[in-house]
Image (cartoon, rainbow, N blue to C red; front, side, top):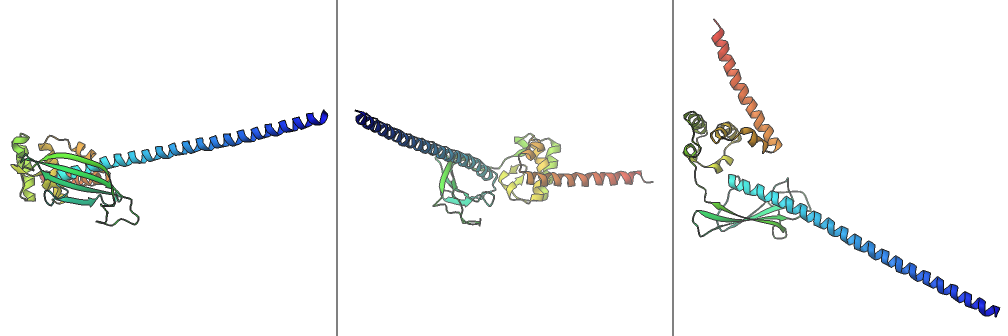
Length: 251
């Protein structure tokens, strides 16, 4: 009887040990499975964050490129022709592709602007962006009227003083398409920077635009150049007035 009871107790302890081992294996497997699910969710979340960041960057670059197109800073070659380029060394992994087509309305044309992303393996060099391998992150569709010259005098109700001041500054530039009655805004991106700084204050006054609001929208380095040029101009004018005043005071 004693031997049978010992054998029964021994077999029971082995069974309990097997159950404990089985529970440990199951718990370990569930833990590994849970960690794998959490890791997968973290990777998915990180991927979603990266995609959102790229989408926001692409939208900002699309607006930047569209603004440059409206200002004439990017010269278009022809309608119904795909044009491609990158965003320069500041954004080496980004490129753009543009298609401009005619519409049924003669005074309108459609624009399809694609912002593409492709990580570069080497250093940046111009015109080496591989548009065929790049991923299109964002596509912008827009309608634009055919560029027409603007009559600044009638559009902004220029006074005689504003007309004379602006006409004098535009006459110094001496470029066709930059007259008060025949003004092409796209040409502002093609004149010299010094000429642009000279005509900017008078043009802003004629259009009832505060120059400070224009400067606030410029990049810091460009804003510093404009403010420095304005300081030099105001210094020259004050110096000239001071010289005249000194001459009047001499006997």
